[in-house]
Length: 245
Image (cartoon, rainbow, N blue to C red; front, side):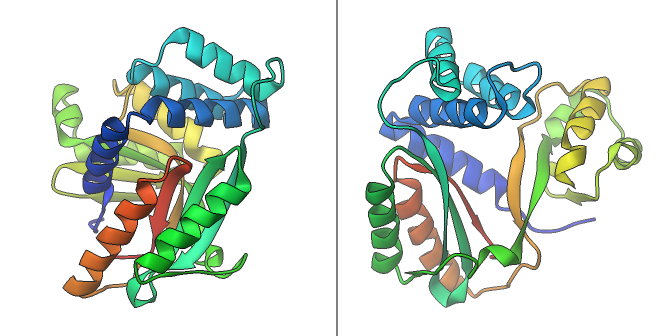
């Protein structure tokens, strides 16, 4: 299958913005804390925690920071307010649906900052359930063409292997392929990739994927970019999802 993806652009922009703000470690550690809180501190038994720790290690987060974040999540370490995940729903320019996933220790601060970003940039915050029904939780893995070449992988053969492992959609783009699967099949898809030699995909995680994407004009795309940048600049924002095509 072929399609459109904002993965390359967003990942590059997000990584650059995080580095400029110097808060990448903070965001990664929050994700570790949240994963440990939800599923326990044993990474061998907690798949989400293992993913969060692997991402942190790839960005050279010190081991002490990782261990402290895990203990904070399990309650072994009392360090400030408890981290909680809150999803805000809203509409961007042109009525584009937007989900903002946050990890915060101060709900009042976060809701104020998110609302302010929407209001300033031609958007509005909706109530619970106003937007989220347009998305579904999926496992998403991005594999670069370079990784395919290094491992001498044939795309068609790889697709068959991934479908057998539980992949429901495989999208082809100029520089990568994107694999989507039900949440319960995510781990088996990653294991299938490891067997094929891909132990560290370009990106992998559980994400909110739009059930249907909406085509927009150039002006709306530019306005959405501005809103995205404003939201991404907030320390508590972990991920941003839209139904923009």
